[in-house]
Length: 163
Image (cartoon, rainbow, N blue to C red; front, side, top):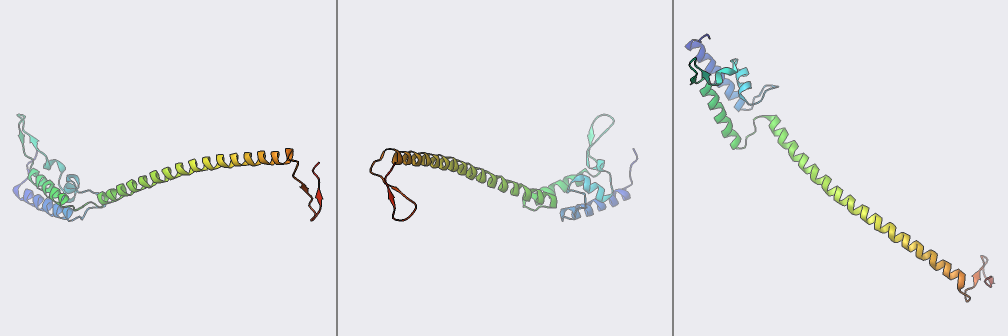
């Protein structure tokens, strides 16, 4: 593995810090997020420099830019705790989650209202059918057995005895 010079490391750290500041201000590239992958891409360094390395004997040593990765994550956590949303997609996701919750609530209310209306319709149809049956029964009784009912002709003034 090739070692980099102190001068190159200093330039890389400067580029990482500049990229870190841009990302934490919300200046994200088109397809990027506010994460280590985008930080490495913006700074022009490999992402592996942000993670610990293994020595040949199996022991662990910090990566050359691991301290910067930790600083980036710490600053990002502070901004997020303060309520700042750096990634516009995250803000959009939160907004859409709110809209989905609101729409679900509206659908539940409409479903309940629809169920009430269906029950009302069933009750109304049952009552209308019962009233119709009662009207038919009363008409049948009225025309069939009453002897004191006179049949009226369609012409005015003529009265006929029932058959």
